[in-house]
Image (tube, rainbow, N blue to C red; front, side, top):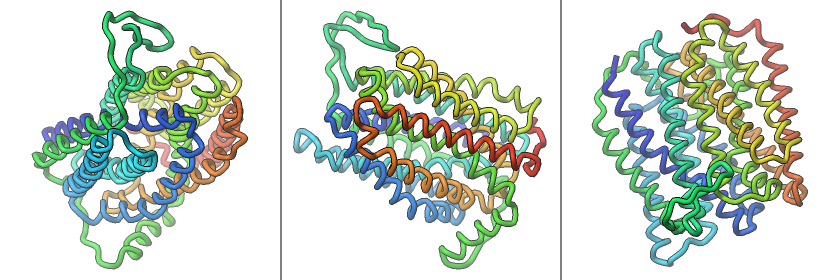
Length: 422
């Protein structure tokens, strides 16, 4: 087992992930504070449209080249772009809104190659019997960085007034003031971590455990090869598409619905929005430690159905509730269901998709998710959802979609691989 390589991958991912998490919390709240959520909604929509073209290409790159080199290239390019935008912000003293939106765009595009590369790399250097262990460990470490990012973002977004630090709706006197950071100062910390991660990744030495054959042909031919594989294994295709619906709902909540819900429905400040990411991450960490026990008793598709239906319930409760504490509780449960679904999904795909096609298969699932996301964003960007507290109806709509996805998973259940992972 490539233990040292895996440790270095996790360290690099944690360092860059924490800073990226702070930036991706700060950007939506920045637009909320400027009463520009509609502008951000359009920016998020454009980001997803661009992803439609980028994701298939990124999947081909992941399967064609050495995964370590893909990691390094994506990290170098992402860090360089962010560093340039940060430098411009320090030059002007502030950043124009379109450049802040550009950071969101480039970070999101980086996510679209970073995580599929991470999963493909881990699958390539891990023994089959350790797949569920690795996916759980990835979730635990990733969400610990999110907790840290949320805690830091809580301070950086709002600072402290009179030495009062607010967390989870409670106030604490820490005895000194901390000034809120400007957005380009947050981006500076983010850009530095890219290059620290790049250095760590460059030190990775590993031995591939999965054999990949060299493929010839154009980009379209390579993508078609991945599509043909999934079409000849339709249960895997159905599972991959439907299991991503929880992730779709989480992304909508994390980057668009949540900020409007806190600002327009709960009428709370940025610390509440940042704290919600922490409660989400705590739920995900809990799942990372406990889900392996469910794997020994239940099949992965059954676990996925339970969490999908559970997420439908979570969004319905948020629609019906006006309590900040119920909001935190629901985000904790969302962390459980999304992390549980992701661990189950990645483990299932590790078991059922050859490493040869893993990047392309993942890009196809991402692509379907992006299409759904674009449709939902086009709907939720309507002025109706930004009036007063009408954002709650977006939660009701999302709850219905999750419930339908759960029904489709039940319909296809017997066709899935129902073996246990332990």
